[in-house]
Image 1: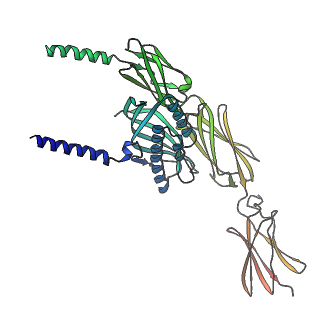
Image 2 (image 1 turned 180 degrees about the vertical axis):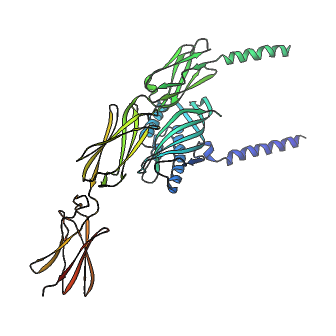
Length: 178
Length: 288
């Protein structure tokens, strides 16, 4: 009987260990998650296939780098996928985090993007994002606030040399809690 | 006895825990305006107050039970803020949204910077409306677009913003020269300049010229169909067809005309073209 219980415990321990060992890093560090883009109602310019793929890829990577930058207080990570107002605001937040000792940790659980405006000359795209997130506010090692939330963002992206950059990222009031 | 104790102590402890810090505040405020949050249910003592949001991550000690004042400069960026107060045992949180203040700046994208004359809907202007804190103003606003060509009357149109953005398409003027494209909203305005240049050559004509025994062919001043001089540097192709075959020479327009020397032996035909436009044909006889 003891032996059976021991074996069950060993199997359970192995299973738990395997879960954490094989768990993709993206889940642990809040990095790129599923990004779906709906461009059916986009105007006045229609979106090209390649642009659609770039937007989806680059927006996901922007969130990945933002989560890492805020988690690790590393402003330089913003250089890859942020520019303009969005980059300045996030840099301010990182500076504040360094001063106060608190950090905001995002665990990205997916985005539903809807492209709403694509400028006639193709130099700016506005999108709505319905983002599923786990947000933690951490003071030192202590988690002072944790929530699973669906937030709506209004996003402005502009093309860079080889990718689309997030120029503005603003949460909007319509919010749905799970 | 145990049951009795449990039935008394558990609700009592829950009551104590439940009475830990509570935080209440407005659902929405305007950027740059102070916010007052009520921390209640704590009795007295010190607590820690955290505020996070776009561009914001701060903490400070507060007296529990008092109103917590969030300064205007802590809520300048539009978006969702989280306020948390902790009393040592437990934390309570509230969220509020900061919306943009009044429009104070218009950002204007105009493309292209150089355009041919008389091109329908060739110019696009996109205006973004921001407040003084550089938040996109999402409430609808009316943006006045104005296009002022070098010659002729200005054209203006008013367009409403949607999600802080509005746009317009314009047809380039028939006369070359700079056109000022402006967008304004209240006192905020932004201006861009688009250079309008001549379109394709029109009525391309060439004439022969013998000079010191050499044969030259030269265009008349090259103009588009609206009479604008085609830009210097535009290439004109001269083609000679004679008994030896076909020879093409490209020459750029300089000071309004293109000119090229062509050796002629016997009779030849000279043709001219610029882009997709062809001109007149010359028949010449070489001089022995």
